[in-house]
Image (cartoon, rainbow, N blue to C red; front, side):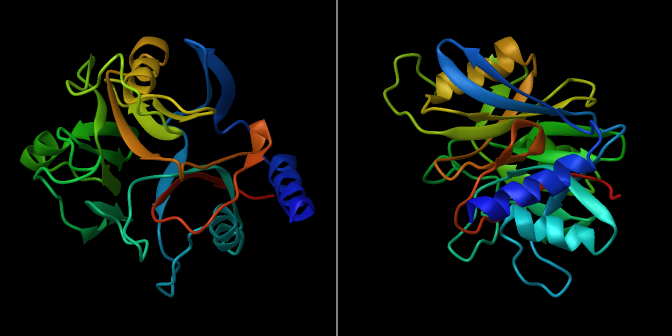
Length: 245
């Protein structure tokens, strides 16, 4: 298994241009891996099922599907909460087709800890948008995934996050710049609180809006960092696609 993953990473790195800028960093004693994408120049997409409607679920499955098109996966991350059958908990759009409606109401768990939000990918930009604002403005997203809670809302941390919280988990999420030209994905290398994780996006990554994707199951595919995190099948996956060799 280790040899297979190593070979897969070597194959991807060998033909990969610098489509994504990935790096490791430390903030307030916590470790993070961060990957930054420019939506104006990169092909940023969401993935859930293949052309036959079968769950992809793994980074390797996404990469294999792209390979049949002569394309390559340059980066990927799990991208939103899902049910036991891996269907999205919230709003989901892929290739312009809505597969799940917007869920605007509060509910149990992190997803229902309002405000939550939607990660919206459009031509030339990507944005994290608070759910009620998204519902009111109805942006024409080519891809969209709803998750929650919001980590940063217009430069402010989510009001329910506590600096002295004892709830610590591995976490991952995405933040975007005000002009939509930066999408910055981050995953913690150790257990962190919501307050610490949100602070990374606001204070270090300088993204005025950021969205939590998930905890504990958080996984990253980043050939630049030698990572293709293993694990059970996931629901929505976000990734950058580039031309193959």
